[in-house]
Length: 594
Image (tube, rainbow, N blue to C red):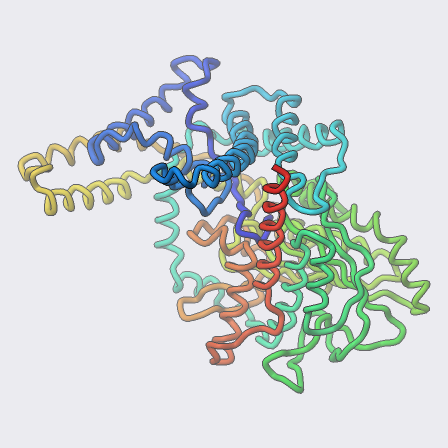
């Protein structure tokens, strides 16, 4: 559900503004007892371990902003001693003010959502739309061709639906009982349990894929990443640099709206194409390390070959589509509501165009390949199903990190047409309303007292050994008892919360690339393998293209070929540099205007 860029983040529950509790007078003292106790405990532990840290409140706020916005740069302050650089410092201040406005706009979105979800603020749709629109206004103009065209009234309807679904999905989850410490220790516990041996056992007896298939998958990944670039010129440049079949761009938009993802369409102009089906990929005869040219269709003069590539999550509009998690009726089963609407939009928008292209080509049929990552993979999968209803179109799809999309029966029904690639612990491929609610209830029930005491014991022992003057031996036992009492009093997990039935799974033939302790293994797995979140430290990174899909495919091939210098012919990282360069140029233009 996610952009492959470094700014993408996926979270089942946004963080709450720490100031929101102290600023709210809408709850009685009884409702706030648990929060007050937790705040008091954190304050006491902080004082006993680290001294008074109240002066760091501003730093903590910046840290939270970084967590929400996934920033990588920290404002370290300027050099106030050099009076000769006043003009430069003034420019920096202007840039910081602009960046601060953008951060605050985005942070306001998540703060509002968090307050509504936890009952600290009533749902006022006019306020919500105003805040989200302000955040969207900050992003408009940063990237070429990304302004929203959705009317305010339509946007309000979509946001209203998002909040209704969130309320329905999480109304039984005691969100106010979730302790942030529980997640940290839950993550530690899952890391210890889901070790490489556990993963190997989970995948035992599942068929490995032919590694030659990875060449074609990486070609598809390159084109999927190309959908994230910021301008049509960059799409053209990426197609020009693509090493494989040559494509002619016939349609492109870098603008997305809720349920209307950005995408582009190309026609294959020709080139060497081996005879192969869309589920297999034979090794290239001339160069065994480069493989075949994508797509996989054999040359046939009765067909015209077209590729439709859909962008994943990049803007707030895309995130609205992701947030429609509810399973809605679709065909003979059910599907992810927001993604399903996005896929139907593609079909409704382009069926006439494809038929015109077919007529002009003089061919009998269209061989259509749909590609995408994250939200784009889901929309492409739904569009693949819809396009196959047209007897003039034979559609297949390859998706990377596709969200939990359809019910089990529908997923298996489309194995011959849809391939879903999942990178190890990718959280998005496991994300649905049911799995998100189940994870939150797991956190509510998690007993982390033992984990917390292990940390306290380790820290107290270290202080006692390294700085005994701060903690004399005769005081050590009393300090440990105090911590033990405090943690035992506050770590009170709930019990026997009901779990939701998981309905949605990734579609089609699922290929799972995972770390097996030695390298990267790739096996075909049932869609039901992704029936819960795999809570690991890489669950977000695994969803991104550079740190997840590109990295795992590259490592898998290097291990298979026993060549540590191997590189795929199409460099996905060059596309990321193109996007970063575009953002820098946009920032330079903003500076000139100011």
